[in-house]
Structures are given as C-alpha cells and as structure tokens.
Length: 124
Image (cartoon, rainbow, N blue to C red):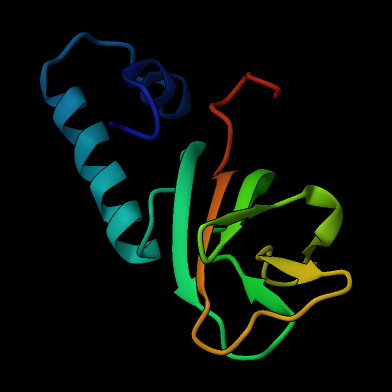
C-alpha cells in the first residue's frame, strides 16, 4: 500500500495531468521509504515478540506508538496497570516499562500495539 496518493503527488508537484505513471511513482517512492526505514511507517496494529532478559523494560521497534493493546508474558495477559509506555523524545521509540515487576530471563513476551503515522488529514 502506498504511503501517499496520486492526489498528494499532484498537490506537491503542481502537475495535475492525468498519467498512469504517477501511480507507479507513488508506489516506488513508498517502497523506497519502507526499505530505508526497515518498517512501514503507516499506522497499523503490530505484534512484537521478544524474550525477557531480567530487565524491567522493552523498547518497541516502530516509533509513533499510539496505543498498547496487550502485554502477554508466558501466556498470561498482564493488566495495563503493570506497565507504562514512555516515548523517547529523540528517537520517538516507545519504552514499555514495568511498574513493579521484571521480565524473567527467558520469558516469552508478546506485545500488541498500534504504531505509525496516521494518513494525512486524519486525526486519531
């Protein structure tokens, strides 16, 4: 899925001619951005799986986290009162920090969250 539309390209370039190649340009530009970043910056629900290493936090891999839906550790869903989502002001990455526990070494951690930028003109 393209990160922008042909209408966005037209508005940016000032070139409003109808041409099929513009769809190809938009898709190619979107692919370049995704490959460069290493993730798709569009808003989406994501799942991050990792293993505990005895610490009390996990850094989520995609910035612009808007919500954490669930934290499951070794098959048990932990309540949202067990963690805080703290955004690093420099990197934009979210650190999920436990309030009173630690992730046991080797614990299987599954975090479901929504991250990425909302499409232009849309506010969530």
